[in-house]
Structures are given as C-alpha cells and as structure tokens.
Image (cartoon, rainbow, N blue to C red; front, side):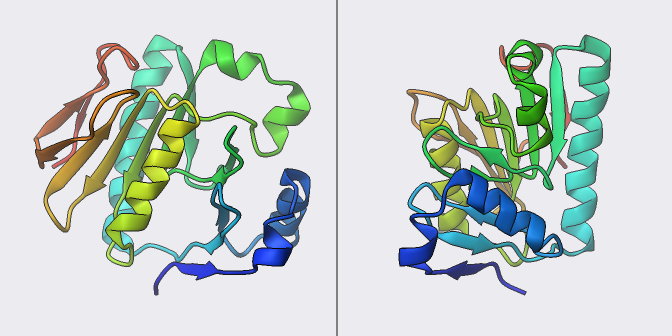
Amino acid sequence: MNTIHLNLEPLVQNLTHEQFYELCMANQDIAMERSATGELIIMSPVGGESGEREADYIIDLGNWNRQTKLGKVFSSSTVFKLPNGGDRSPDVAWVKLERWHQLTQEQQKKFPPLCPDFVIELRSESDRLPPLQEKMQEYLASGLQLGWLINPQDQTVEIYRPNQDVEILNLPATLSGEDVLPNFKMNIE
C-alpha cells in the first residue's frame, strides 16, 4: 500500500493546528501528517521488516536514553507540531529533556509544538524517496539538529545537519549520534 497525498487545498490549508489535531482524534485508525504547505498525507502501514527495524532503532535509542537521561524518545505514532507549520510524525524521534520540560502539560499531551532534536526516517518498501527527503528538509527548517534517512533499498543513509550539505553514506555498520546524542552509536545493519 502506498502513502496517499490528498490535495484538499481550500480546506486543509486553512486548517489550524487544533483542527488538524481534532481531525486526527476523530480518525484514530488513520495515521495522518500535514506538510508545511498544508498537504494532508495519509500514511500507509509498514511491513514486517520495516516494522522490526523501526522497533530496533527505538529500542537502541531508548536504551541509550535510559542510561543518559538526556531527553525523551518518541515512536512513529507521535505527531509534532513543527514551527514551520507542518504536523509531522518521524519514525523515531528524540527531544532534549530541557526543551520537553519547557512545554506545558497540555502541550505534552497533544501534538508537541516543537521540532525534535533528532529524528530517524526509515524508507519502507512503500515509500518514495523524494517525499522523505522533503520531509527531512522540513525538519531542518524547523530546527532539527541531526537526522538520519535510512534507505535499505538503495543501501544508503542520508545524514541531515543544520547549515550543512546532506551527507550520503553507503550503508555503514554503525552511525554516531555526534554531539547531539553524546556517545550514542547505533548498529543499522
């Protein structure tokens, strides 16, 4: 099944963040995102291989975070209300603890109004690469500090950092969290 991009331009472009939240709550069986340009995106479910990889990445990041207690880890079910206007759901996300604590309890309960400091997007069999690359650029424009677009189909990883060109690596055995996630190393094989 492919991801569906619906053009509901006159309706969705004027949709407030609160209305988008209400739309998602009224349709909880449908995973939705909204781009910064207002495009409504209905996400397709992933297969077993992609789901297992995504779970492994969350476990690795979660284990590191439990030891360091530096932030909060989020799954692909979490939608972030990005500063640039989009409402996005990365496959794996991490937010620095001090940034998380700056949010009110109400903001933490709904779609958190911030961009994660770190995200992982995993290209599944049903994903086209250009929309994922655009999504990574949207995160960067919203304040992302480090992002990995893992592409098993092409055996590459794209690394996104602020004010730098995208670095493309042939699928390395491990990736480093650099200074964003100190001493974090993730096996991606």
